[in-house]
Length: 133
Image (tube, rainbow, N blue to C red; front, side, top):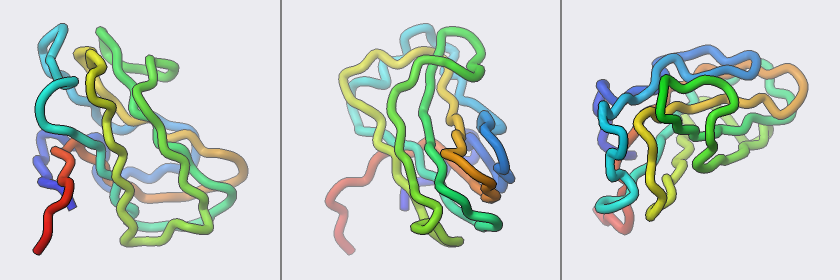
């Protein structure tokens, strides 16, 4: 589990039943924030509830120089099969290093096919690698 800063939330208990943008986005207020250097980062998605589960869902991390919308430049994506998702699951989406990230970052939920119903929370976090208890 990553460090959760509520100012870096992309979704808070958002119900997703169709393709949708995350409720919120991150505005770095810088045209070139320099996220491609330094500490690795990720988007963490918490699955809070699964209602109807059809085929699956793709989580797309997108960025843009102006307020993000559908069809923005995709940084990375992860597809999860509906059969593999249950309440309490956590999906970690590592952000690529060495790529100049743009000012705005948002998560886009893309329903693979069929009827889906998920409740999700998502946030930006440093990527924790190799931490042992």
